[in-house]
Amino acid sequence: MSNSYKMTFSDLHHRKTQGHLRMVGTGGVARSLTTAIARMLSTQPSKIPNQPGYLFDISLNESFSWGEQRIVGGYEHLLHLVQHHESQATATGRDLRQIPLQVLSKNNSHHFSKQQWQNFLALIDIQLLQIRNPALTFASQVTTTLDLILERYILESNRTQLELAKNTGDFSKLQLSAFKTDIPESFVELIKVQKANHAKDFSNPEFDSHFFRINFAIHRCIDHNQKLEIWQEARQKNSPEELDHHVAELGFPGWDVMIEQSSLLPWSQLYQLPKLLHEPLETYRTGWQAIPKVIQACSVTQTPLILFDATDAQLFPDQFLLAVQQALVILGILPSPLREPSNFSAEDITQLSNPAFARALRSRQLHQPLKSPIPLEQLPKFIRPSLTQAFQIYLDVLINGGEAIWFPKIENLDRLFHFKLSHGKTILETDPVYAYSRAVIHQIKQGKTEYVELIRHKYPVFEAYYEMIDQAIA
Figure 1 (cartoon, helix red, strand yellow):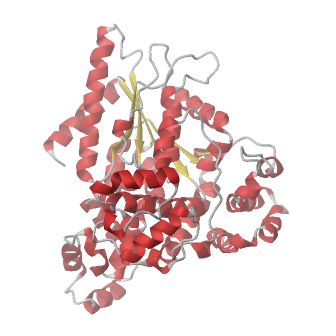
Figure 2 (cartoon, one colour):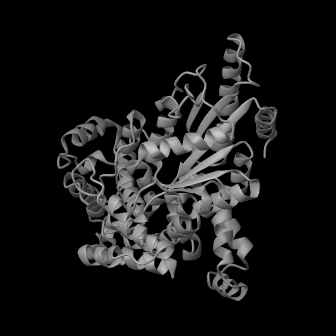
């Protein structure tokens, strides 16, 4: 930890202990929805009866992300903003002991190592952490990767042509010569077909190619310390005898030598790493492996935590936002008429090319989920082990989240499953996998429900996900 980092951190921590600064963190696996929720909390007045005013002076979007230097820069950026707002408050006669500065910081759970999380939570009064049916989050990551590949590999001179294709939906006119030479020709043709058809079938072998898998992982999110931590976790899953045998087979004298040499390889050579090392990195960016790490860090630092399912928040946004604001008030994070709506600027966001983020930045309300899951057989094969792990984490949080987890207040499963969405379909018709997870939890906590069998019978195309859910609770 550099001296400037220590000084910056110490400066912020001093303000917190003096009561001049309150902070709320929010993050999770559905990142554009986290942006939308952060925007709601920042720009809308309090929903609490008889407590008018706004909750936040400052909203940070994505400041703490993408590697050690970005995280250090995030703290420096935060301190700079806090100092600026302090001077403004002093000029208007506001007493920060009575009405402290309040900051909302969006963070992505997969960017921090365990120690970085504990550092961050030392400044945070409460952390909001969001999960979502993994059948949706992984499919979303695949489509996002396609968009990023388009942006990353298109030649600068052809950007106008790409924007035109996006606006018209006609990608057929994008020539191979419009792309950099390090994108496989077969993949350009695949992208054109996928984008033109708004395709939801990713079973083509190209999606299991090294090219796609490297882009799916998006290495910038994993700094050196994070990479070492992920590999240490992988090491602990094997016995010392298994590891020694495996490392010797690969031609290394020991684990430490293998790690030292492997950590120096550029991301483009990911598949020159042993499977033991490249597999844990591939799907880390989906955020799921980090969820237990955040929960554990909150336990260590005694930081209050609100866990919630993104779909629940979208179905019942008023209930959700009110519950969050009431929790903040209990902690002394109060609305004030002396605050204005907090600026939630696009400049702080790093994925402006992603349509979902662009929509989230314009959100004035939490839109209902309109997407349906993609059957497991239509997803790339390489993500399936991680999907199984994600369902285990998802169900564990839903079942064992205790008082930390927020569920909407509803009378029964009938009310939830037959809730009509804006496109006219029910939640049961739209996302049977979400519905099945809820039916299973209801069965565990409150006794048998006919919905478990009904969903399996009526929507057999998602049978592979139902089996994952059943295995997760076994």
